[in-house]
Image (cartoon, one colour):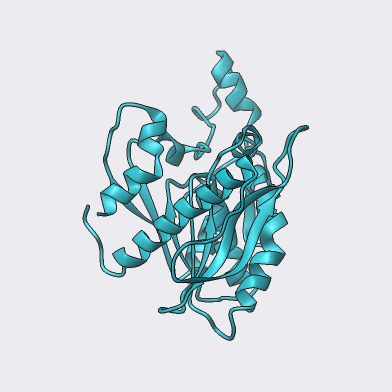
Length: 256
């Protein structure tokens, strides 16, 4: 993998390892077992939210922690684990955001975490160095968390290192994000289908009429436009299946 100027491989690998711990946090929750963050970190706070769905319950989605040596504060968010999380992934309609419009499902989850993210980062002390990270659904939440910290001025220089991220907002949102966030890296496996959704646009052709079940569904989504944010750092690894191409370990292996 070619690493461009400004990309910090050590930070990316540290962020990826923390994302794996966020997945471990959820697994412990599912088993009813205690969990604590491993490594030389101070846990500043835990993040949780209740996904959509009749049977949904509040789930752990990550944490905010500070590296005791570097003093970097990491806002870490995991990806899809429960059936209800999948509902949030595919709730494609958009809702208002200060920078434009954002996907409803991601926004519904992140809005439940926003006050805690801001509060935990404030608790780190004056002007902390902040890195926001996440994988899959967590990468989508990481985009919203980065925007939140920058827009609120809680951490105006917050950086983002995301893995396998979907599109999150419309063109206005992407323009504002890219103009306001100084450092945002989006690490992408070109064979990972998750990085292609939601569709950039459902428009098949100007003035076209629906003529198949797929185009009818797309027609219902007319007016929804999505655009990626940040600077993509791409690699190509094909492991033979959609889940394998999307796995966090594929991204870690590419970096190492």
